[in-house]
Image (cartoon, rainbow, N blue to C red; front, side):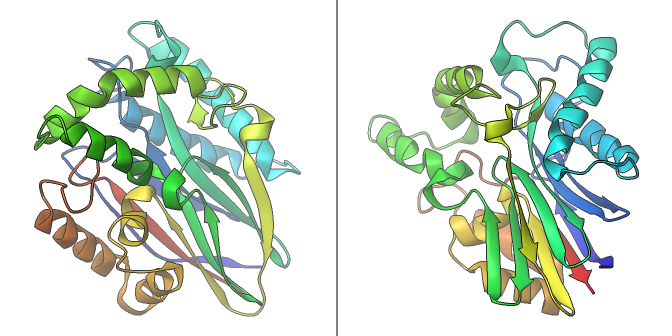
Length: 283
């Protein structure tokens, strides 16, 4: 099966975008660097999240031509690559696991009649299959800002938390605790990082495709249109990307975020998040 990149768009929420997306050979991916919880970057010029996302992208670009039978082997291969570079470039070693740079990622590979996928974290894959639209990845109450919404509502009953700085400061201790206890730990969650995720935390599978089909890979920032603002479902997000391009979806997203700049109607940690989409055609 041939895989073609039709469109790709990525828009940062600030001066430094911590998302990445790309394709090489039969592979394609989106990467979402997890916001740093350290006071100053351990290795990156601007942030450890951007450093990790960039080097994950470079690793995928170089690994795509290497023979490997199981796509679920990729996270450990990438972690080994990242660990070696981190050891050489870091200003100091992490003092705790919550200091480890990490990223969510969704990676696909085209085979003869299927699209293989591997998922770590809360990116999403929306793909046309012979039986309809299939949506893969963490979503609903388990995804990103949705998971924090109830906590933010409870905190606002005690304090206004009207700015991003206030929300981050209030949540930082529990964010550090949660990341330290769960990042690539048995019973926790799997991500791309400088330590490999346990195999049981790597979600992987295959979806059948037939004829000319399309797929959209998206970071959770773009999936806010579905999960947070509820302006699209998976089908309409894919159809809009096909008809109008990914830039139109990013424009719509930023407009919705700006209209709720205090994050009251749609609780979320940050007004805007890095948002990335990659549109593929398989034939």
